[in-house]
Length: 310
Length: 295
Image (cartoon, rainbow over all chains, first blue to last red; front, side):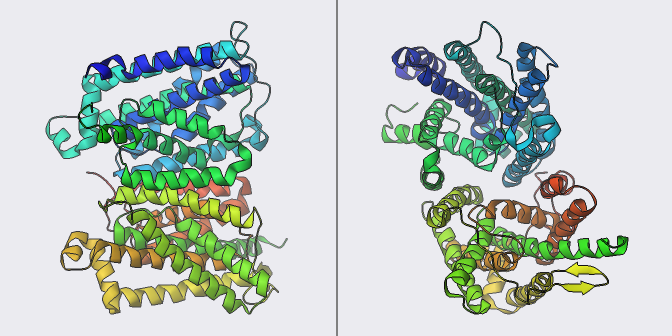
């Protein structure tokens, strides 16, 4: 009990985010760590709907892309200053997520998954096909840096780490709030939760909107880090990859997004020459994990050490 | 390019030939949804496996096309058995959501294995009814359209007979209505699931063989086809045999109309827009009885 309170997700995240860049000091390492922060934001957001509400969304990759393109287009076309473009991304993505959610959350779990898959895929197709707006398959060029204060990888990392920490903190507070508990009640038994007066649809919409907001922040971060966006990062494989990372890390468990983000960041370092092996590994791990360890790595350790669990 | 009538005919035939493939995929989705309650993500990979396998055999031995077809069907059966094994082996719960998730993982595995085995090579089959296109009222019609439509008709008749007249078909229909009842009457869930997945594998392979003369097949061809087939299945009502066939043909026609009269750039998005519209406005599909909605 005491251990878990000291190592609550925000504390653990904070320690990691401060310690890691001091251990790994190269520019390259910091760039990888920005990646880690982006993943952490994406999975923390996804955890609201996939973990707490137990409705599997496959839209996170598309929403992430929408955030990236919003920030990229607004700043590259000089419509808004980069900082405002950064702020606009999560706003727009949240609105779009609420729109997608308001229609799809009335469906049963499996059909919700397919609807989010379709919505995410439409977004992905648009990124590649609206060439006049997005630059098409070649990607969007000419994105300015975020600002003079945030130039260089290390400065970018500080921003990413601050946002990721804030994201984990907010998620932790939401999870322990009344709404968060109601959401988890809904995830474990819908009839019981509804009978206790939980407004199922509204809460799920809240969770899905939050997941969109996180995806928007993550997308904007990624855009200004790379100063480049291309559609290939937001397709079906990415959508599945996020669900895989969160599920293996432990969906709905306090440390799930953290473990998942670490795994996905590690996986992305395997390199592209092993493309076939990468999806082979991801596929097999996921196949076994969803059936044998539905609670992921976090759940597995809790099961192996039942006395210290929770 | 001919007049408006010619263009219309051209669009119709193009739509029907691809729509027939979607119809087969959609029926595959329906069979598994009825047998297990799950959405079988691997369905699209069945199509890819069938097409690629037929292509490999054809390139390697140059046998009569029937041999390639049989090889593809054999792969379909094997893939169906493997899918059931992979999606049912590690879990005791028989939960439809778990099976759905497991098939998502399996999709990645199958694609990776085919990528590692074949590289990114593409395969194609010759036309089954001769390469020379037919000319109908000035429109050029691919002979494969006729083959695909014929396959759809035969499949519809065969499946309808299977579900109505055989003991196994009756059990599968019963499982769609009340899986627990079927299990308690002594037919294990996994036996039902195995039959459903094998049927789906065969249907997918047939679709793949039908598509391979029209467009090249590679390790990457399956996913998009699977998603489009699912859209077709939802359009017709998941689990409804004739609905799935109608949904597939309708989707193929819509895509062809968008590509022919609008822009080919957006024809890939048609399926997803259709899927979203169906899910949001009429989740039971145009003809179905299954309940996708919560309340």
